Image (cartoon, rainbow, N blue to C red; front, side, top):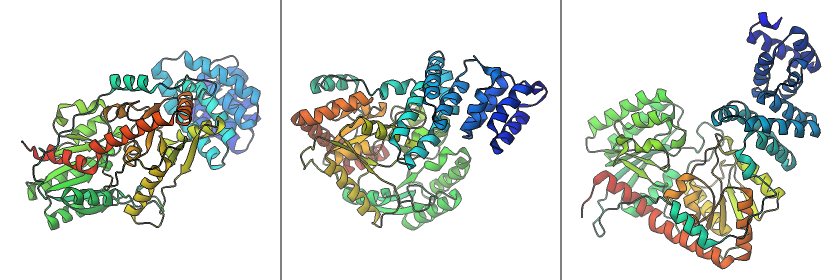
Length: 517
């Protein structure tokens, strides 16, 4: 009987039936062996997260769980309807799943999403997207909406909103904005020509074949030159941290820099902290005047306690996530620069007139796979959104030339849609949030709490959080181009005034050297 067996034994039995493709036999075995509801739910969970959806479906239909309303069982049944082509089962069980999820508290919903739904739906979406199947993606989205209530409002295709009122939007944006103060060296003060070493990952995706060389290094060289600094690059492989840090130490010994900016991505793995700490101690001992800055491009994915501990040996940290509570820790006071990355001096004013459409220019990866849902939904609803998909693989251009080409594409699009959601449903800021207005295009931005610290919604850009709001923006671009143009120009002017490269490096300069007038 099942009571005398461990869950691991039951799972092995289930996997045996699945390997033999005897799914009806799996169901009959569970019934005959007396597997109870808890055992079946556990085995179904294991089958789901290993993407054995047909087996999970068969087992979830065992008579011993008939009439039991459990989210994992209902999810397996709804997914079973999808993969077996039974629309009636898919819809009926989706409704059941939605009712169960609505009765859960927020913590249980989050756990269900994180540990069950997210890994399962990611793989389903990945396969459907590779196959170019918008109808299948929309069916998967309907299942996701059942299990993730926040997606129901976001992707309600039937919702319609009234015409946008720019004045009202700007008023709401000003009430919500939290624009950061940005202190620069005193006006008219001569810039000290400092020596900078910039240690940055060489590839956008280290370790991945054919990944593009990351253009940020050459952008920093161009920005430093425009500011009056020199800049030496150290490219990091991000495969062997000790080797990377030796290269940084050698470059500092050769060039005797005033400032080191260190791409601090590896600290997301706690085991790297000790190796990194030894480098910082060595640098400080051998270069007492050296200012060391930790650069965090994805600080939202680093544990807060690691961020706090990583400040040992740093003079400042550079990030773009001011909404994270961790930055309010006293260790960061007066030592943090919350600003976008440099753009290699490629800021420009708007040139071409708005087209009445918006364009997405970017990639779909595992860390932003919800973009696939937006693509399918906008295509199904025939919204005026064009999609220029990037692979982020080597394109044969020098890094700075490739970035210039990208910025030109933003400019030519005139209005650019930017998405924020990450796999855990958080809404983060991205580089394109700044690149779009700096390229002279109108930013159409999915809501992210961080954006309020840099721009004013309705005044500098148009914000959306749902398909209905994106549709209303499309109507606005088409029907009221002059008002849309005014927002575009305000956004572009504001971005150049605050986030042009000389302002970014000037702010860093002030934080490090504390000039007084």
